[in-house]
Length: 522
Image (cartoon, rainbow, N blue to C red):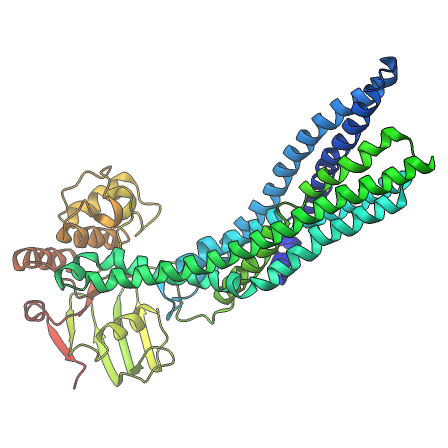
């Protein structure tokens, strides 16, 4: 168990009690399977002697009982174990989302971050269901089986115990040690593969247009090959450990048969118990089938949860998501003595003084890399200023050059701007943005069912439904044809007539429509 899982169990109501119950149910299910084999062996041996049927009644009832309870206990163990695992998974996911909402978490590759908050968080379920329960219940079954067999033959019981320790403890431990490096590397390797896939999915048209698609696909193939090689190493080790476990099971059967035969010849053991000593180890060793995989899962789950812990412990950058500011009687945006720069990097610009009042549209211009988008991020609170002050009075809205469109309806995309917006509010915002779309229409994956202009207008409607008073536009006409860009600017100017508008742009057409221009390069 990792410290993170222990904390989650402590914070989850009845967390430890549920885990204990799941372990007990798993142990009873495995013990029923072992007992079923042992009683069945005795029943067959005794029935071969053709005794009166009443002599077999108790054993027949036990066979039925163990056959039923094996399934019942396993089903209940699955219910309880998955319930506690899913509770922990849900709690960890909520904590992760809450952490992300408090920060911009800059510097993290998006594909890897997605892997951390989805696949790596899922590891807490694997840790409970596929690691903790099998091993904990296995200890219970080994101990109980050894004690029961010891009643009839201690030498056979000790031999079974030795084989169980070899198959259930030593082989999985050695396999986990041999594949530890590969298992630990597989988790970040999946994140690296997710990064490449994410980049390809977002930039495929541009890559094809510039003839860079072959190189990008080569990077994808290389990342996939690295992960495949890691998985192959883990599978080879798992196969080797499975061979050791099979050998241990065979030795357990042989030693049980040998010691049982000796005891029968010495007259210290009834000959009908010979089948019990021989067949019981087979059922016991079936319990260990997934132990090697569980040991490897432990390594992967531990590394995955460490990656999640890194996200949780990441220092907050900027203000992250926060409740909208209260409407102001005199909205404005002002910066004084401002120095801007990304955290940990060299500042890009300093000594900035700027004020934007209602009804004004001010353009921020300069060559690429001078700090235009950095200024917008600082004004929005996504990153803190290096020095100076930022004063934003009133509700603020942001129209990005690559507005994210969610794979849902037009109305739900608009409600991102205000979650309690009514249907009438959504319709009004779409009208003000001059977007003639059915609110119930689906927009497709990442807005593929909309044109570039429609996506920008959808982003504008998202801002207008939130009653923004201060508006920050980042390259509002990027990738739009001149006609679409002019129409969008006309509508923005009309919709934002009473707003304080700051525009980050390099488009001369946008600059010409602004009241003032601030050149960061100067």
